[in-house]
Length: 531
Image (cartoon, one colour):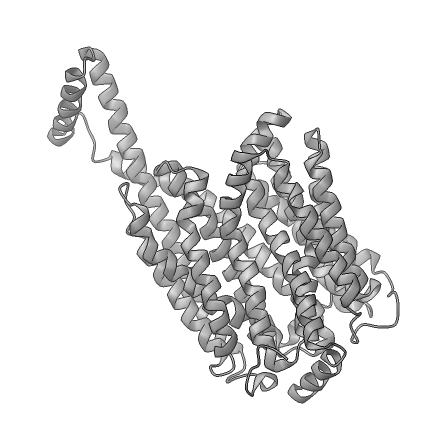
């Protein structure tokens, strides 16, 4: 298989000169950055949208939810869509759809309009990630894949970190529509380069394919319901809501029927048969854990920094920025190291590093400042460098070239679902652990306890010295003590969340035993950055 893979790669990349490959890479990476950045950049502008559109928090949350649901549904279909329409037309068309939807989002005058256009944007964004990654695998020779996938990894991992910083700056200095308008020149330029220089894949020729309408319908019902449950479960109180119960049943039935149908039909919309490849299946499972840690961590850290430490969105983005820089700096190193060290070994080191950074973050307190977070965040960023690109290669390089497009769709879907599950789980887990720790701490606080009484007397004396009446000073002292308990309970709950993420990575390490040993045959030899 390795020989066939190398020959197939040679047959594909032979159609491109070195300069054309890098022009296509530039177009692809611009699309990747737009797609990933747009998820996190919008969240910062949510408060401004609420005021401008007269929407509640629950209503405006569909701006993000609609995008992600559409993205998740289309992701596993990207392989089929690329084969059906042709890679060049599908990728360029997706860029155009994403760009046009960005313009419409920025000009929206009602919440319903904005949600509708965000759904269109999410549908277009799926190809900017999955088809883009498959394209880079197909148009570059094996000796260059490591470096190119490292560049791809920089876009995927650094964009979520940069999103809050950029979003905060744009919203503060301009207005929320500009977070969409800035996509227009970049998306237009990327689409033009794609149409001019990219060719259709040699592995998927022959014109339009039969439309697997039933498979697409079952996929939309199953994944759409599942993603809605993950996005809305917490606000709807999970299974206390009949809405969530019904959607959960639809998700389970829809996905079960989808899997059954796709394995039976001769021309499936999603080629699930690629999961028979042991290494690929293990990589997909590990991608779920990667998404859980990557997006779950990005969700938890800003809550701690903004709600407990009182930092602004812009300040939070600047605190997280060094971690993103560390990831970006590690990627080129990984691009060369994968030719000398088995990818699964690098993923194991990355998992240990990520778990270690989470254990370091368990030492946070109410007085923890940016200087105390620098080392664990740098370690976390460096660990992502060890995780992301080697995992991509270890998962996808063993697939036959004709299956790469299908494989990237499933792989990116797994990471996206892992991220959604991580955010849903950790947000609920955080609330429950705060309640648990508050109740535990309250057991040690009693008006009959001498230490508690002494603390209240000290607080009251300080307030009386500032001019508060005695009764009000006592009341304020109780309120201050309650806030102290709530703060300590929150700190303990955040520590539990960080521990949970670290343990998830440690438990995933045995999956690496399912990958092939050593360096993939297709990548043996001296890497070249240019050709």
